Length: 65
Ligand code: SF4
Image (cartoon, rainbow, N blue to C red):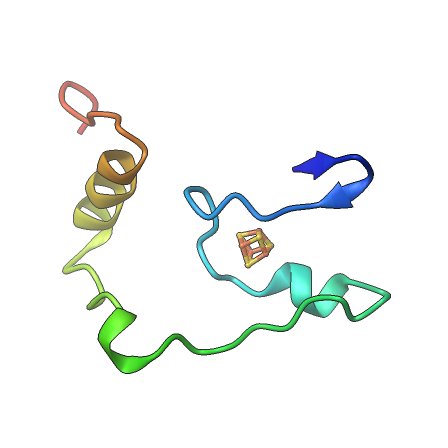
């Protein structure tokens, strides 16, 4: 997302892939590991991941999955 020509990360949509950090020519971003207590355990499978992502966004996957 760009606001006043400044890129901002929408943390509700970021999946932490790190592409922005490796692609930024100004090296304005770095990817850092979150503290141990803030790291969510990995989802059991793709369906669980999709459901959790939808819930964080206030959406429901009911009827889709
Ligand atoms: S880490 Fe990946 S998903 Fe998150 S803002 Fe950067 S490119 Fe987008």
